Image 1 (cartoon, rainbow, N blue to C red):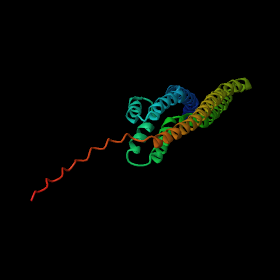
Image 2 (cartoon, helix red, strand yellow):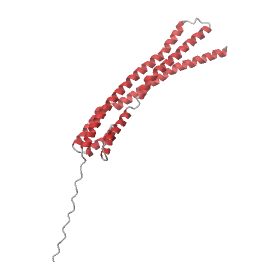
Image 3 (cartoon, one colour):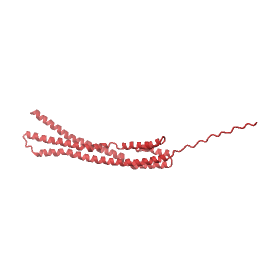
Image 4 (cartoon, rainbow, N blue to C red):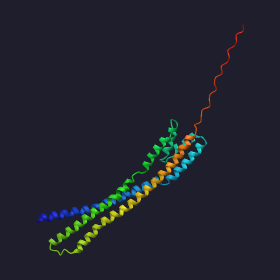
Length: 234
């Protein structure tokens, strides 16, 4: 009999641990979502206007046919998309830069996504984690009711209802965290889609200007003059 009682309490402890663990996981997921959101907000802050301002500065130099000055602006810039300008200037020395610029633009746009996939994962998973915690809590509540009845108690519904109410906290927490994560995920997806379109327009203009700009040609060196041979007098 004592062994059965011990096993029952061990089962209760494991179920209680599972219910508490779900809340810990949900809390960690919410903190991770906050960290990812803050990091992406800082990375994307004013990126569109700064890229447009850099392009306009480079465009002014290209319109003056000053490729070295335009390239220097791209080299000095700390913006992540400045690499697209640098790749364009390098490719223009060898061949048509259109393909290289488009390829690098896509690569930089992909890097801007960062870890926002974590927000989508948190939004999809945390409701189920909360539901698992609720199920574990309900199991524990009914188990305690059975133990109370076996011990000679009345087995009133009040104790069961209070246990179920506590268990539902896990589901509520999971849904709350999921809603916030999904909202942030959709916001960043929309922001990145808009930035991608802005970059496409900017670098299309940059490609046109780069193709229309002629590198300064070196002044031709004067051809050596051949002095006529002295005529022989007979």
